[in-house]
Image (cartoon, rainbow, N blue to C red):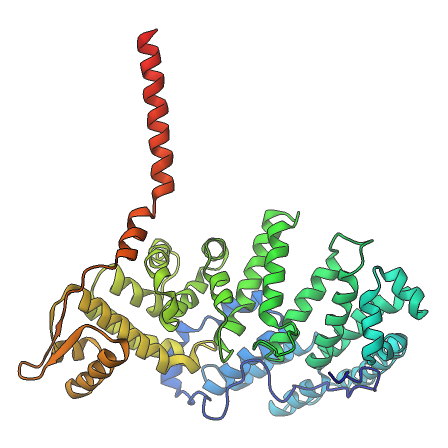
Length: 477
């Protein structure tokens, strides 16, 4: 593997990188909304609820999306971006934004640009000996063999402050928008620290570095599994989750960090080409759902969306919909109400109405906007499957109405569905209906259903036996 040239003077980006996490392609760009549409759809925007739990750099792609949709006034979005940019080193982007809103560029901002460039140069010079070491494969392997930071510093004749200086340099690069370099530097730092047997306890700086690595991976869109086994966003999410499981932080702080982690995990779940099963399991596990219920019920939109978009999650549908129903007084929107109408109320007309509203939700949701076609297809499939479970003969005209399709279009869709899903059904063209064959329930499913509460029932049985034994003893005495 070719080593990166870390010691070469990195270009000071100071400006928005060409492609940020989740930026849509030309084909995926949302259509511009009219003023009337924006006024109607703004009720479905969750961005203001989510911003408090995102790093400011992760907010930029969300604001870019809102600007492209026309949901808010463009000048208002630019001003919000300027507020975010004030705490970063992307000076050129800030200056460009002032030009876009026809305002004079502040002199202090131009002065600060020179100061940032000087800070970058000073920080680079301080860690230059370490950067040169990290460029050579043989030396990187020797670094990996060191069992402590002291041994590393003695082996390569480094000042111990250089190690911590690497974090500062990575942070400066991150604030300049150079997420690739910052991610690589933090990866090396974390590797060196993890080998230090003299510091077994994770410090707050190390925790911050893990979060920094995750942000860098997200902004670099490093979601897919690398052929060389390199770390990516999902791996860092699991590491943070493991840390929160064992940390001695207060419960309040753990809850806050879990809330942040769940929001950040939306990026690899909804903007990656392929979603890892383990990541979905993390997002939908009992601990995560409890956290969502307590601190961020608006994420139930994405819980429901996962159930609809990911066919492999059917086994979680029943229990998860029950939780969504339980929390419906706290949060509901067309996506959650679609599942409740379909699986709780069995109201197919209401489900069809909510599905139509789901299209409006997807139009203004950064994470769901590119998934509408798949969302609609899978939602129609859920409606059809549920309808088939309670009807043996289904009129094609009626199911077309439930699916919001024309009769001929619905018939073609059902034929393809029967072929692809290998459903035990046939089309009766003369009577324009679908005839379902009633298949006996799977033996495996029957076993699962009957043993689902086996542990609880066993506990109750043992308790009753002990109670009866005590009663018998009291009677004999």
